[in-house]
Image 1 (cartoon, rainbow, N blue to C red):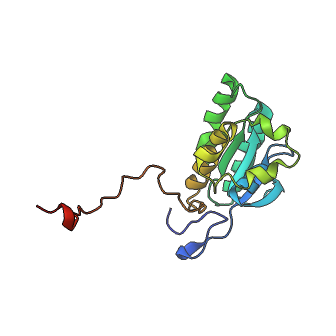
Image 2 (cartoon, rainbow, N blue to C red; image 1 turned 180 degrees about the vertical axis):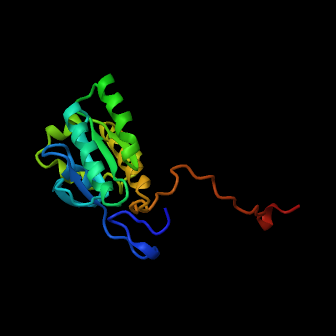
Image 3 (cartoon, one colour; image 1 turned 135 degrees about the horizontal axis):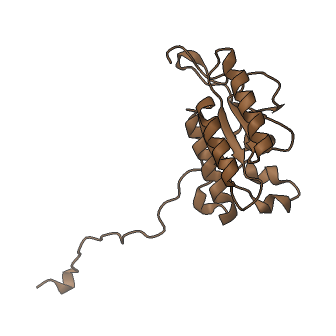
Length: 189
């Protein structure tokens, strides 16, 4: 669509404002997603256009997400991206998967975010969330890798450049340096 841009993006190729994120209800993971992406947390959706809607992988939350997505596009604004946070480690049920398929046409993309049990045990889990896009996946604890991949996918889907990471480290194993052959004058024939 020519001339149309997402609410958190700039027209004309200039610097892009931060992404905007809102949840369809409290406790769906809005602050976690916004923190992980370095986006603006708009709290609970109030009808204002946002780039990303967040909901839980439950029937009620998905119904709210569908309504919110329709409200956003009713004013001619671009379809929002939908971040669906898992309710537990078992993954989405068949009814939830079916509802996701019904919502997809009303969104720019749907990204499933896995449940991360370890965040329930941390005093300040958002400190860990802040670094997910800036650290190489191999340096993250295993329980965080899937969530970090999903955040990378979500950020890429929005068209925002990836967050710059730390400088890359050189390979651990280097080929031995070649030394020129030297012949000592005493050893010369």
